[in-house]
Image 1 (cartoon, rainbow, N blue to C red):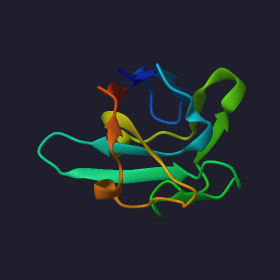
Image 2: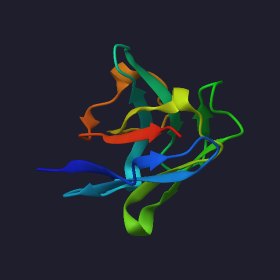
Image 3: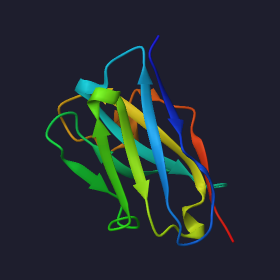
Image 4: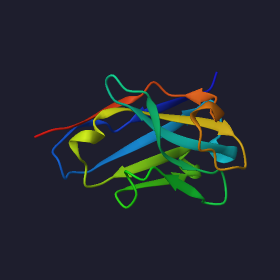
Length: 124
């Protein structure tokens, strides 16, 4: 049974950086579109960023453009989310999700595989 596993979360001060990883086990990410989502306490799950399987197309929520960067290393079977200039409002559980597709998937409902999430807390 394949699964996605997030890592890299933690406590960081405002203005700091974190790099989240989404590693696949049991299957290859080569043909998978991947999305990063987050859910803050009391709020719904929202898309942060996404990347397609092979063309390098990416998408970002307006609130993170210019600060977050999504990338993938298929040789390591891992997708990354580099988060810079973090703000307290970025505090949330961050999830990665995947689906076999050639398209850039931007909607939560389009994804089938989900990881368990990693907590990111931005606080002084």
